[in-house]
Length: 293
Image (cartoon, rainbow, N blue to C red; front, side):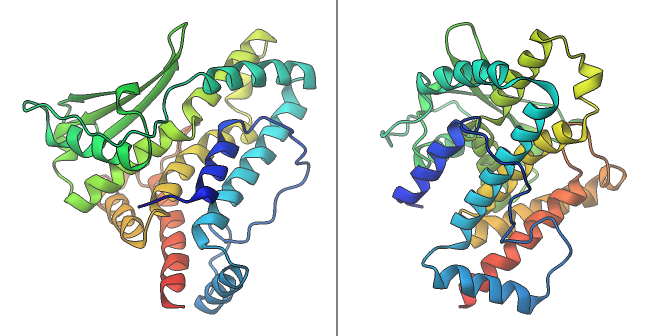
């Protein structure tokens, strides 16, 4: 998939979501991803209106998620920190990201003969997204008892931002090729939107100003903020194409079928499989409507 200038404008807007936080009321959600189930007619009308304005569903989704992120950040700042404290951590994260080497114009894919095919798939997708492959450490593990197929990791080593993808071979190889592709895209989007880094930065700020973990971890807005980044990875990956959306949906459905006892379980930082599945299904319906028009 070739990304145009609008995509990169959106991506840059994601990199510094703390900036100019002015959202005091919930943003309007043009795409009804999380609310009551829209009718097929409502979905078609919404998509027709979006396309008539000269944009695509994916672009509206990008902006909608970004606006909602800003809104939640504004609520967190109002609840826990002064504008000056918030600005300090915002500047620290901004400086880290501006000096990061995650993005690159190179599409050269390096492969060694002894690596797992999943690593090759990951490198190919990183190149497709314009990500610097040398900036992402890709490793494999063998943990049959862990349901995660690919985990994304992000942090700070004291000098620069570090990025990692870990492929859990037994779980990854269970999936169809289309599902493997969708899973890797989800993980790569988790790196590109810097959600893990931002979450760590906010928690660092809370610790600095003496807010105990049991306070912010039980705050509904903070929980919504953390969960939103999981939704973002699902939805932004799915927005790449209708085929990816369908593969993401099928992959989540398979997890629900394999682990029915975990279907409705949600942690502080992650929505339930059931809710993730529902959000992707909703987006897929919008993308199908767009394909029909």
